[in-house]
Length: 460
Image (tube, rainbow, N blue to C red; front, side, top):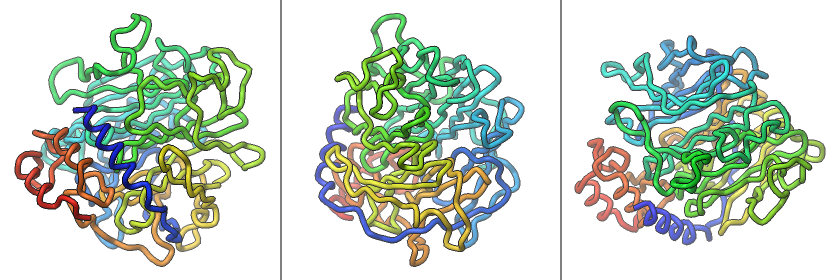
């Protein structure tokens, strides 16, 4: 089924690449101005078009109700694990609650996952929604993965399920300090400096996840971590999947000179090496561990330097798949945390196209508020993109001419690429018997959803 998914998604992506990115002028609109402290993640639950979930460093997840004309930050936290979390006391502190993602079948199983740091350990834990209040989570969780972390910085923390699957990908930093002194990123025994891939179980006793049998190092040497999907990362501070085709975009923070964006098509072979610590961007560091710019390394698709391009620390964004600006579909946004320089581009047949500098558009909000220290991007249930800055503000990217409130017109368009076709069918089949491919609103994927999809085949 996974091979079929990759093949159909690749075909669909190839057929849709002829469409050019749009020319809509954009601006950030302030959604929430106060009440949040050092946000790190913006997430939405599957099928939920009314709420955003915001992680804050100190260990609190808050909810923003976006269903009305004026968004409301709920007073009661969705989850408060401040007592478990180390860090989060300042903008320069890289520890804390760093990641959140929801199970594809969250509507039925209530499971979600968080990534946080303790004094010397990083971990991924599973929690459950309350059985009586959808705006509150149960207070105790279980640990899926944990590992020792030697330094306080470079923790990564972003996690996402690949669209149409139950595979959870987890980005980890190299462990910190400078220049990866323990050479973790190139060490296949270490969990640090990697992209991991696991399949969480639903309920049940430990172990709370399994390892996909087609992970690249399954069945290999006992000194290799089976959960590794890719390696050679320094600090993947915010990465994303394109919801329309499963392509992966990884923003990796550089050492002192170069920031980079890595790209992996949905059907790419596993086991990629992105080059850190011997390569920073495409520049040679002189450090050991691999051969700089060697044939076994995967080069970034975009880089920018600290001196010439005003860079400091990259914050990865999202690929736009919303309904308010359909001409903008396929555009990937990202920003520099310190300088606030921002850019976008569109991948076409594996190449960067339509690269645009967005400084003038994203530097200030629709009401003139300065947008700075952008630390995270996220999507709502309609595919519209939001940004969080470390000052606690949440912004929504909207047309300069004014916000357009819309709902994707075709529920059978499961991947939100604007067409009901084989890619949507593949998602539905992969989700069969669960909630993640539901079309008719009964929180279950079955024959009724298949009938709805087939009747909508070829529509936009």
